[in-house]
Length: 267
Picture (cartoon, rainbow, N blue to C red):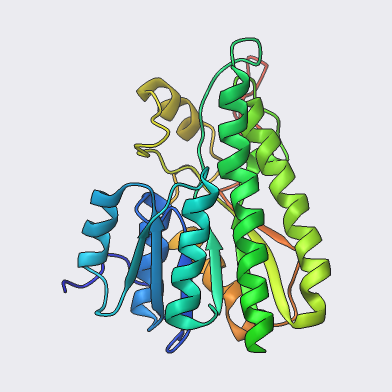
């Protein structure tokens, strides 16, 4: 095994069992790298079997993988069965998988709408419900993270279904946080910053340049940025935090840098 490329000192998850969906993607692989470095046992899920295997090859021995189609109930059931068979229950679930297609509402077919909602909302519901039941049966506390987006709070033209799905995901997170509090299972969300390069939802060069130019802190998301928030929320240091969402996006979701006057800077 070669060493993971992403490291984040200061966290110890030795012996913790962590499930990550969308693990072969940009954010998923960053999350997996950091949890592996922190000593966690991993179950990595992704629909891309080839990319998933490449990721697993650099993970510690004993890392589990599952090729999951999150729009297919049978595939999700198989993933849940693998978790139960090998671990009994996870300690942490990271609902990271998501799709980010672009299209105007008048152009999007109902089948595409359903695909977005199935992957971005329904799958996290089904997986969170299943993981929580396993945690409860095992009598163990747990932490569940929804990977959300600033799009949950800021509507964007041509990606309305995505924005809608992330707003719904935030409300789902809060609902689970309320209902699972009786069992000491905490549920939170992290909104990562802009990190282009996804093969599942490719973006044009013009799109990438436009977004990067308007991020207040002047850069895209780097490997440790959102993962630091995820690991904090899963750690004992956040034992009194549930039902919250943390934006780690360089200020991208708070407003626009565009100045509509001739004088463009304060100084």
